Image (cartoon, rainbow, N blue to C red; front, side, top):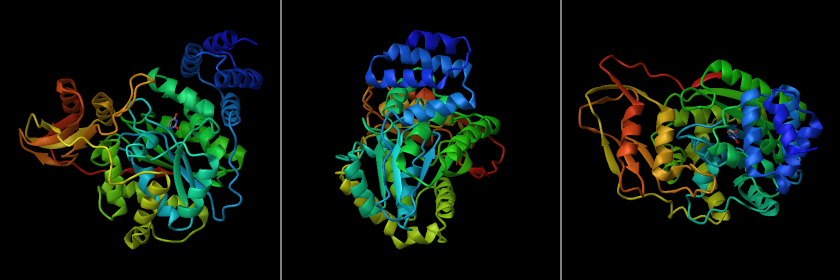
Length: 419
Ligand code: URA
């Protein structure tokens, strides 16, 4: 078998066998198949798609490229959450310690930034010293002590997702149902979980732009989960507008901690509580997540988790001097395009444009005025945090994300539908 034949077959829209998919995944892992062949393969899958059988085989091969963690010696229901990717999406950071304080074990294997969206791993690494690459033994020790641990894919866990993910990030091959399904599910099925809540982002800043597309992705993921015996709940949530006010890495950690303090933006709170209720329901635990937050326990757990990962919460990366973006007009903000904001955040240095690029954990955007707010011409509407000296392009990108109107604005809810 040769990689080039498998790429050719998919390029021509043919169905790949389990053996061919397994061969390609093994070759990607061993390094025998090169990055440029992987790029071509991913683009062929992106353009020609995969049916469910192929998607399942791809997920299975990616899962089996690493090991499956055994958590049977840790008491408690193991339930996790994953987002399909958004802008300003810091929900995992506050959600994991909230449900962990109700007794759920959350073994969270997360990803880095992908395309214009941010990644939980990059956000956690903005905390000085925080190690996302724990050994499995260390991961289990943190889970035993705090009930939650946020780590990245490793050499052992879903290693081929790590390889594919980094290449998809910079080759415009993200928005694909089989590639998203296999990426998320190969990580999640390695976790030994009983239940999974998916935050299915829908809209301008999501990979699935319409509810119809999002439902097709949800069906694909639910079928894989069902075959693997994992219960799943899907929350379709609006991603037309960035979530909360902070978009970046360090800046988002601070906003997630605000939620744990009982503060923070309403929309971040709405999604966090909805997903927390979903995870509690899957675990069969009847408790109110708002009461959990009020008890202070989730914030303590977050602090403990960070400390056990080697992180220091007194040292979160953030540039001290922001550049200010002023409103070009007076009116009510009707739209802040989440995709454009995500692209602007990548331009600040908070995301990658090449796979070997480091991210600037201190970079990002702070939205000062959001949808529904009335502004006057010249009023500050956003801060830009960046190392870059010339911010003209970033300012233009941010301004192009805003739509102003004189008409009143009706606030929308974030949670659109639950399956
Ligand atoms: N999150 C992932 O882990 N993978 C994707 O492809 C998209 C979101």
